[in-house]
Length: 262
Image 1 (spheres, helix red, strand yellow):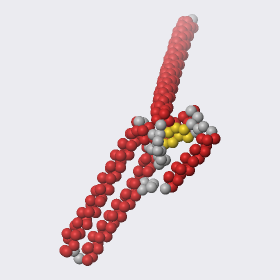
Image 2 (cartoon, helix red, strand yellow):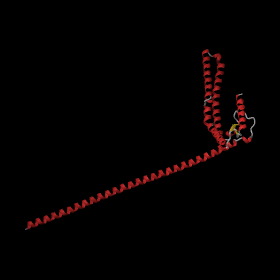
Image 3 (spheres, rainbow, N blue to C red):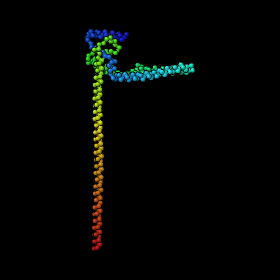
């Protein structure tokens, strides 16, 4: 009743506005658009798989409860009152677990709500953004969603802009893919440049290390040569001194003999 009242009020306002100024109106088939977006289809499939898994767990727990109830019925005559009460408490606990698990999966803020928000909402936002851009660019005053609760008694296909919206999303995705590809190429080029720079720095470091090693080796050789020269000079000096000493000794002996002979 409220929805019909809103529709009548909207129709009345729209008619009044149309009488004052021509308005451009369009509509979309949201479900058709979403069904033709691969990301949405993939997200829905993932959601369905998750929901199926959750339902399997709930069914398993429900079957366990049913088995416990049947066992109690079959064995009730053999059980004491205390055991019967214990069995009933166990069943009640299991039923509470089942209820809580259902709430955790499918409650207002449950796993399904959170997962749908994560997977589906980004795709829906693409559609809403595309609709807004088209509305501004094409100067639409009103765009309805054919699949919403709004009652549409008749719709002319020429006002259906679903393909236009879908085309814009596909175009946007292609542009995004090109930009991402460009970014990847740029990142790859930067990485290659950084790698080349690193290699050049490594080569330079190796060359510097080699030059330093050669320098140290040359200095060591020069030092050894200098030490060898000094040792040779010292040896030669000593030899000359020894020769001179022997000469003096011979001269002194000759002189002494001469003096003795005289």
